[in-house]
Amino acid sequence: MSQPDYPTIIRQLQEQVATLTAQLGQQQGGGRRIAEETEVAKPQIFDGTPLKVSGFMGACRIYIKTRLREVSVEAQINWVLSYVQGGSVDIWKENISEELEVGEIEFESVGEFLAEIRKKFGGGDEESMKVAELKKIEQGGRTMKEFVQDFKRTARGSGYEGRPLVEEFKQGMNGGIRRKLMEAENPPTSIEN
Image (cartoon, rainbow, N blue to C red; front, side, top):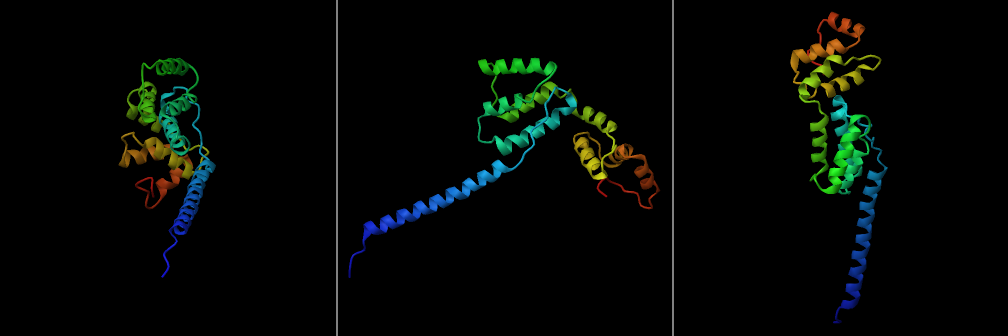
């Protein structure tokens, strides 16, 4: 009985490990390519308008999670600051950039930095602002589906629910649709149906 050729077996196993490692690298690299190819909307320029804070923050979070996850917190914050422009927000941006540069302030995460933006530009009581925005929202030339989505986004955080929410929704609808709903045998009791 012959002895196993250990050097040959070891070499074959090393080749198999190298092949499997290369295949795994290709699979993971493919996942990165898909993420890199996925289109993600960048946020609109934020000019300090209180009603735009939530939308700006949401767009930043999505973009950072999708495209900037691997970069440093400092780079993420600088990216966010690149979309903060116009009017009095420029002065704040200049001040915060200087404070960051000299180490007067530091943020552990981009989420903490976005919370600072909300605190500075959120306009105080967010619920009151949401209610005011909810009372202004109108369907206009949009489809009902578009209006519903925008209304839901606006209603989030307003404190409105149930009947008052439905009444605000009806007020924002185009008159013709509102009249047809009022004449319906079983009018809807929520914006979902």
